[in-house]
Length: 425
Image (cartoon, rainbow, N blue to C red; front, top):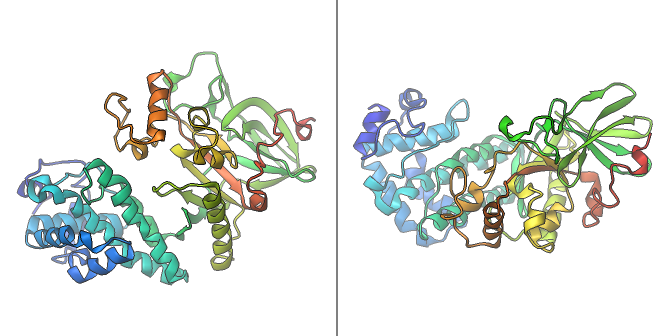
């Protein structure tokens, strides 16, 4: 059966999303079923992911429906193979909801595939020497996808959106683990800024990558049309054996039209592109209290020092809607997110106006305030910004692990200034 034949057989239109991608490759190794469709398997895996037995009925009838329908079985295998087994990452996008053949259980089709991460994650952790307790804790991501996302968009029904499934592949191949409230994976940093620490005062500054065009306010845009002619600046950066020179990044999350030269007699380079870092992922679920964030960072530092001592890491990095410095303008100063932001060195990212807002509103593309949900304080605050004519932007961050003992002291912002004495030369 071709991809289009399968889609027609389950009552869907042909050529939906990227379903047909690598269809022949997956079907060439189609085994007649898939492990997540075996009742004995998913029952164990849903317990590991902290689901209760109330979810057994939709899982059982959906797995049976897939097993008894060759078209559904082939489509499920294609999804499973694409997410976990293909030689290169091929996450699903725009796949059908399958309501025509599965009704309200359409999302359970994707939940069964999500549960399939469990044995592959456990096998990866065994190879890495990570403890079983960490594997079980990391598997909570599947429940987050269901309870904190899909249920909200589908009246409480269980399921998983197909889009996030591609992320699960990371847990099966990378040094990736949930520790406390947050998740981390050890990898070379893709960020292109360079970070320096003053040898005497300990002050930290970051210099922007070369070739970035900032607007007059110090922000970056994905669409060149957002820049005004004659405003802003384009960055340069150079580094040799004795010094580095470039444009400052303000730790509050914007670029500065201030070019500086840092002599290595006074400054040490502590982070550059390609250095091993803990890249952070923030699972849904709230409760990002200052204590929870601090303890998670400490757990991460200690965990990776113990289990990956051959690659000592200096920093945690991340890019997310959560690191938009707009949150400091639209949320109360005491909000948990703002407490977290004040501890970090924020850095700007090219923005299109809707970056990351799917995770806030569960809606693709630009947000229509007239149709967007207003259930949370964050949703309401962002919508007020958009309704007043504001433009959304996301951001990035880094946190140097050597500063963890001073977490809570706002070490990157305290007394920070582009004119601080360390930068006068």
